[in-house]
Length: 351
Image 1 (spheres, helix red, strand yellow):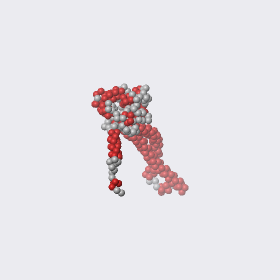
Image 2: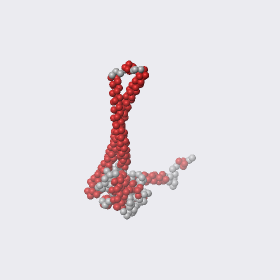
Image 3: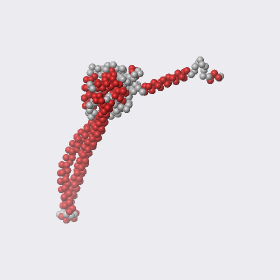
Image 4: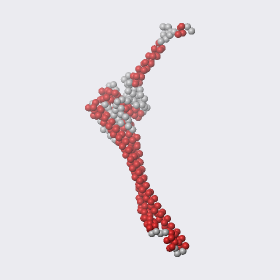
């Protein structure tokens, strides 16, 4: 081995070039990754939360709470039916107990009289005319005593059963009602939370632009999903009529209800960005989602269906921009935010 074996090469071979070349590529890759990271949702997968920011509204699963409330109502109804059955049993026992108490009282009186008069074995023996008479009288007295004792025991047992049935009746109704009260309280708390988000979102929009009063959608966040959809699906359908998204009003309404977002917002953005889905930058992307200025087509997201796209967009609005449109949200959504804001706000007012 000679000295050349340890050499980094001559000037002609330029051994350092590959190292510098790869270093440069690594630096470029890092810078590109940082740039992408700064683009809100630019390369995010459609199934992930696209954008998060200070405008985020935490998602409350009201549907689950509504289901729990419905189950609790069913439990109350079931408990009421059971209570009716138990009440019938209580009434029957009450009548039986009344008769049994009469028999038990008579038996108790006889036993009391026998003992109070001091009726003893020798009294029975002295009163008997013969041995056979004595045995008959003894057997008869024993039978009466046992009968009376049994009547008293049956009275006490029936009374205990009656008391237990009354307790069961009270417990059935009380437990079911407590379950319903808890479910109703949780549901009302969640609904109030959503309504407060609506109020906050509208107040924020109005505070940033006095002309944004149209951002108040008047949606009822105490309504059930079915009631909410019945109110908003027809209005959104009318707005989207004749467009590629025609007939998707129910999907928009359900998804808006799920994520607690102004139900007019996503449909209106679709008009601003793609003329209601007529000019999508990528398949089913009617909102320019992820289409950063650097490479709108390359960075824009795409989905496999309108339903998937609507869910991703409204979820992104809820997590990244708040309840409804605002100046700050418009600035975060796109570069040319002034016209975007004006046009979208105007369209929302028509839904």
